[in-house]
Image 1 (tube, helix red, strand yellow):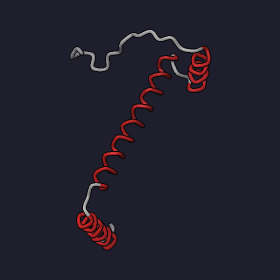
Image 2 (cartoon, rainbow, N blue to C red):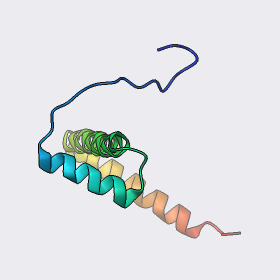
Image 3 (cartoon, helix red, strand yellow):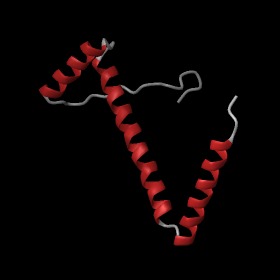
Image 4 (cartoon, rainbow, N blue to C red):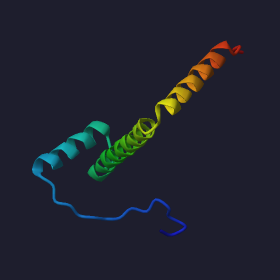
Length: 92
């Protein structure tokens, strides 16, 4: 990447089914996007965000699943304490 163009794009060529091409064109018109490439980029970004979200969810589940019973109880008690403190806090 050059310092002047941090969001530089790469030109690639892919072979898609006619149904996929038609879908992209329909979405391009529906979204009034500049190009089918822009629509495809949006779809890929959404898939990447979903993959990242699922990864974080797995990590959180793994963390809490690895806690001992005592550690889980401690987390729960701290959570209850925090909820109680925030609910008693005066609001402006």
